[in-house]
Length: 388
Image (cartoon, rainbow, N blue to C red; front, side, top):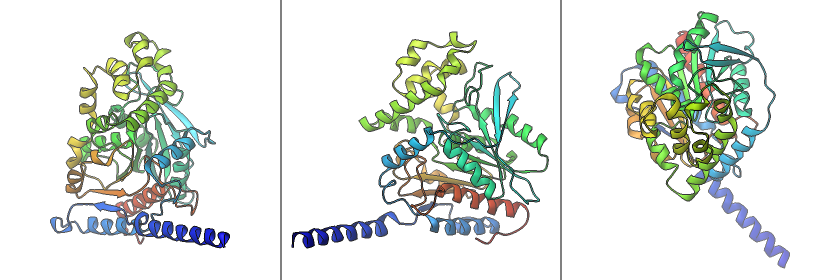
């Protein structure tokens, strides 16, 4: 009887968990967008419908995406594991003498129109990071050639100018795009960013406005309001712990390039090594090198939020409600929803860059979403309507 009772209890528990998963975790992601009656752009209406269709494929993993912390730490674990690096790396010297590199992924087969996606990694990541490599493969299978930008002082690059890869690296994007266009004239250009890279991408899109050369963009786990995100990372013990882990990563992966450069005397090694928060580390290093008075000026000078209404190309923004790094409370939903070119998707689960595929495959859901969105925009740029 005891065994039967135990089996019955397990079955009931399993059914309750299944009911919770089906009723709560499988809720369709929230889509924020300008009301259709406020616009008369028919092409934009069709793209909105296609985005809605893409949301049907969201299946959060029942275990790995049980909370934002499990999603984030699981994805962080995979991020630090070595991955096979495919493609060629090309160094590019900028006008001020600084060096970045472009990691070119493999070209897609049998595609008449070149489609190139500039991939922008986040903090503590570069083109060799496993999920970035996976994204490059995903792009190739979807008919795009990915090229990942390694910022100054990252990806093993020496620091040749008193600027390091940080939230103001968006100022280098035009020179990078000039080079890509010269190398691939006539190619359709797109952008895809993760975390800090996504924030920089949004800032760049807003600053460029109607001049922007990108046909469409995708921002994954983007910090849209830099000052608000930094306050969020200092708001509780758990957030301060995550903050500390991120700082430790920066010290491991980026600070070596500063300390071994001709510009090491511009920063205090002691202040850098004893910093326990991003704010403290950035004031001790980036602000000194880049000429900001303090962290507040650095954040305000590069935050995407003031430029959201100037974004003029189709832009998909994907954030998770349970993201412990970019808190959902920091997302200016009403401002994002006012721009008809911006499609903001908020999932219940996913953490910080932790979206999986619900155990149904190895691919990240956000990679699928990004590829399908850019495919729709590429077809429209070519005068063809997609059928998702």
